[in-house]
Length: 338
Image (cartoon, rainbow, N blue to C red; front, side, top):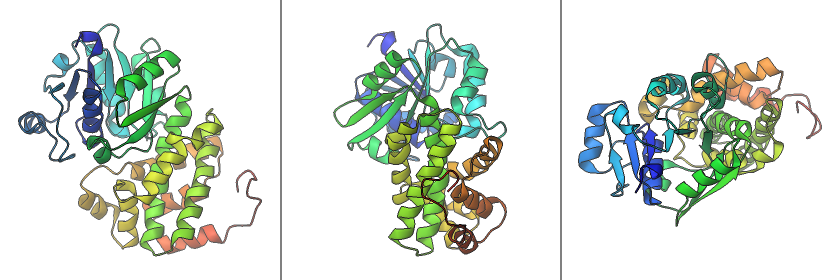
């Protein structure tokens, strides 16, 4: 492999590891870096991430590199896969180390909590306009990607050629990437679906059944689209992999940490107890706060997300929140704010 084919993944959690495996599996020299040196030592020895992605063996072309400067020495693409609350800090850490000609991508989902900004806006602030940028999102559980099961995702970039090249780089025998130029829509979908998945877990945990789950997914999709369009997204994006696809996945399968958070809350556990049990970051908890703030700022009504926020941050009982939704004034299905 030549240096032009090198991809560095920053973030050695489950999703960062799965993406690194997929890029390497697709024939690219791939470097994986994470913050914890002890963790990286174990990855190097075991040739798999036994803590976050057990059973997914590293391809020969995947290198674990504990030295960040060395990891960034010659990559063509730097892919950031960290929680949204760490995204800005990681970009600031990368800024002085990025080689000339490097391009950025991220698999981070969620609004920045303090500012309500989407990842691409944070990246513009920290790194400027000149570096090409892209976001990877869609209905893809790390465990299944790591196992090589058939999967599909969306790669969005304002530069169509960059989106296409990145999609080609990650695609392989059992992995297919589609392209988009709607970065805002793809990012909004990735942020809001985590909040709604907590709600789906709550409803299923309370035993409300399939009717309730489908209603939440459908009306949640309406809320997601409404917010995205208000922020400049294309409505069609929310019918795709990064919208409806990711929403259905995270709302219906227990591999979703956000759904498991909802199930735990329905069982009477606190957020802290649930996070301790899940043992990984549950993005939807912080996302609920950020979505609440952004929706208020742009004047978009999101009743389901609002009730999930109330459960997480105002101590509302799940049954009370569901009752509040069911007792809302009846409206036309396609009316604004319905």
